[in-house]
Length: 180
Image (cartoon, rainbow, N blue to C red; front, side, top):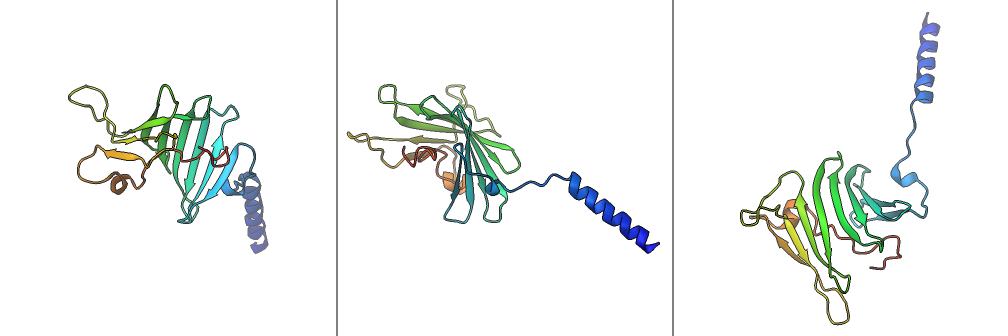
């Protein structure tokens, strides 16, 4: 009787192992032409995945213990510049949407507008949705970008205190060897 029960348990365990798909971690994957991995100073890790047509770039951020904490999906133009992005938490809840503005003549990034996806804030003056943060980029005569100027449009706390990050802008494209 004991041998029969043990056999059934063993058969059930083997069946579960064979039918349950084994998933490797995001960081056990193969680094190819459309994937880049980064380890950050705080021990967290990020994986960048771009679409074959270079129109979408997805950044997944993992905590030091491997838990997915944030997913940022950028929509890119034909030159590889971000046009907009959506920021989601680890449970795939959309938190923010961001739009990027470029100078018409030089094509340089001049503005970033971040909107809260959970609460739509409408301006009483214009009737349009208000961003929670506006970042302005200035350039010198040589085209070198200065530190960004951040305008927090939420009363009470700084943007970093509320959201825990300075900006969603890509400092460098991970597929262009760190070039801006």
